Length: 101
Image (cartoon, rainbow, N blue to C red; front, side):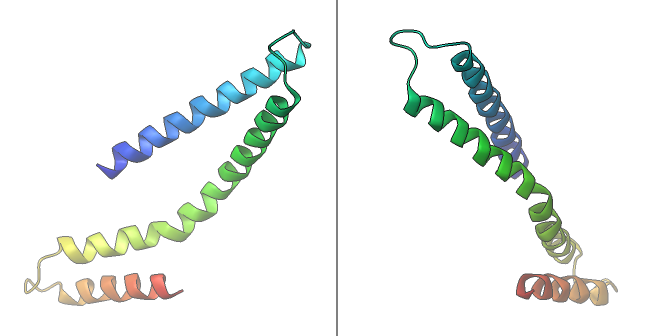
């Protein structure tokens, strides 16, 4: 379920970004009566700048959150009492430590 949401959000992000870039290119061709607005041009440029900033933040955020998403499922998926309790406890300890850091 979460993977589908991430995929859908990523596709939507890319489509909106590409549309904003296309709109800026159309506005750069020249002013047309009832189509060009300075506020619209500034808004589109601001949208593009923010979206570029968000894409630069994705890598570090993924690096910071991925370990937590690996440790917790390891704890939940390994059943207790089958001889892997040390691994389970290590996983949940690392999860707690990672969240505290």
